[in-house]
View (cartoon, rainbow, N blue to C red):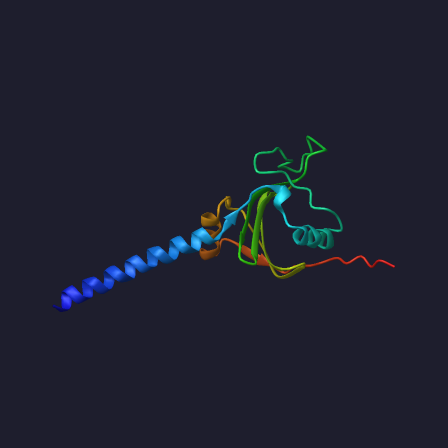
Length: 153
């Protein structure tokens, strides 16, 4: 009798874990187009880099190395743009010397952006599953976020 109860208990735990994982994955809405980047995130990059974010869509060309072969192309390519409730995640490839995957997570409430996380990795991050995997394995290195403010008189 104990074995049957134990088997039923284990069965319910396995089923509940599978349901929790599928609910977690369903909650992220994937956009993956640069024209879907919210204004608040664009404003963040304006403050962080003193200029607009120049980025290519996932299927568009960009300058991947420090050798500029096409001067009109950006040095970034969007890999992942997704939203879950108030959280937004963005991953892009940063070209130039030492190609890397840059990760940002933002909390957006109305016109306010907060709780910004920034990280980078040299691993191939293109989906939410790969992002979660590399975060869990410690393959994503987190950095401090620095903003450059331009005072307007």
